[in-house]
Length: 64
Image (cartoon, rainbow, N blue to C red; front, side):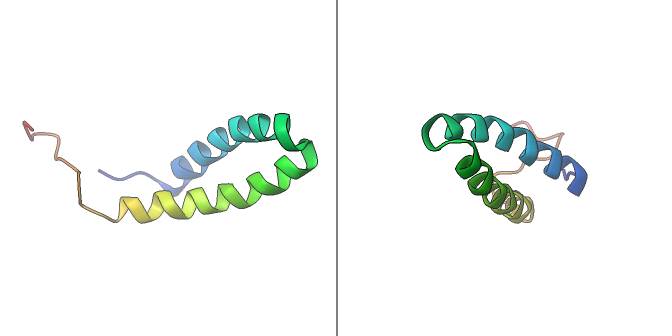
């Protein structure tokens, strides 16, 4: 029940591309790029921190 750093990075980048496009619609492209570089870094750290927590995780053979 873990994932590689590479998978976390790819997931974060794919999400941030979507977020950049949405942000650019409101702030312009250059502002959106700067904001989303920082948010990608924050997202990666957040995802890796959650992976260290056991809360809410279930084994594959768990019923509930």
